[in-house]
Image 1 (cartoon, rainbow, N blue to C red):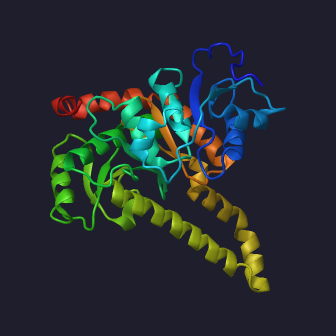
Image 2 (spheres, rainbow, N blue to C red):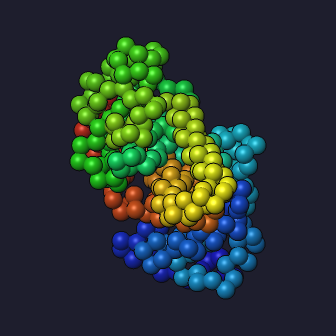
Length: 349
């Protein structure tokens, strides 16, 4: 198969996303299959990878809406991210990020090295003016609707100014993607009082309080999914721990429920009656339904998938990325930064 497929330019309104076809534990078979599931007349996918590996997986499939973009190597989880991005110029993550920087795609999706994706976002795609540190942002299924959570792991060490920027990014995302007119912002902390928490939390509280955002104060960990706020912000270390704890608890609870409904006739009958409702509930909590998290604050959309992403997760990550772009999330970020950060944001660029 010729990698230079005879594709006409994408029609106006079509989203073009690059996909790291060789990134992730299940690549390339699952990533390519996910691309084929998601690709359509409205969503064109650039499959970034070694042609000799990718092309056989496309044999017999409808390839009208996919195109192979050749790369020569893969950054592994054992490589030092920033060094690898600087030296492995033919790697799938670097080539994919370059499609965004060059305007060939509007965003890049990868289940590969998260650190390399962060480095590529900073070094190749570049930061949005006014943002010191891009953040990983995800949507969580709250009891009363979705909520936005960040930073989910991009910045382990933070300053109060970064937390303020995260709040601006989250507000823009909540407005454009979730559809909330005036999102409530909460700061993840160990208590509700303003004086609670670390030096970082207390200083961040003061900045958020004076920011002009709809800041509702501190939110404790137990309240995240209670929709006490629409946007919950924290540093990347705390955010990553909290997110993985929620995922682990969800998996453990459903495992225990499955065990409980498999013992005894009465339990089995009750389990059978509850199964449809439990499946809907689990789907709402399943990371694969969301596909991935977004790296916001760079000049193009970067979507980071779980390392063990299946074809379903990859397809959903592509679809969610396309939806975010159609909602104008990147433009919303620019507008929100100008409105909220003003001269502070300009100075950060």
